[in-house]
Length: 161
Image 1 (cartoon, rainbow, N blue to C red):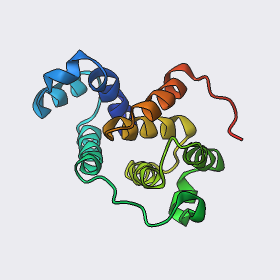
Image 2 (image 1 turned 90 degrees about the vertical axis):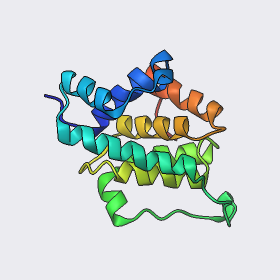
Image 3 (image 1 turned 45 degrees about the vertical axis):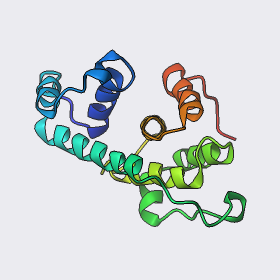
């Protein structure tokens, strides 16, 4: 049986977010039934739906205009974030921000959604999926989404410098 919330999210993303099935907008009951048939547990399914609802709030309530310019601000990661995200994950997030793929506000959404996964440790592939889901959800981020999509699906990404 599949046990991870992120696995449920990836399944939904692969099957509904980027194709014709997304336009059908299936109801929650039919999605739950499909996920159960795919081998996911009820608890993980409910957590995945809660995670998606949290993500949707960012689409409904976009980040306010940032007060500081990105080059003037420095992000200090909390001990909780640093405990769950290793240097490779944190470096990747900073790399995306430095290269304009993520704005500081979008970086915060990514971090908030990563922390909402409730996993003890998050690896780089999981971070890439969360970034992809966040960018897909935000209007006007098509180019950034396409760039990260290449990283996730093609695995054409080398070391972060």
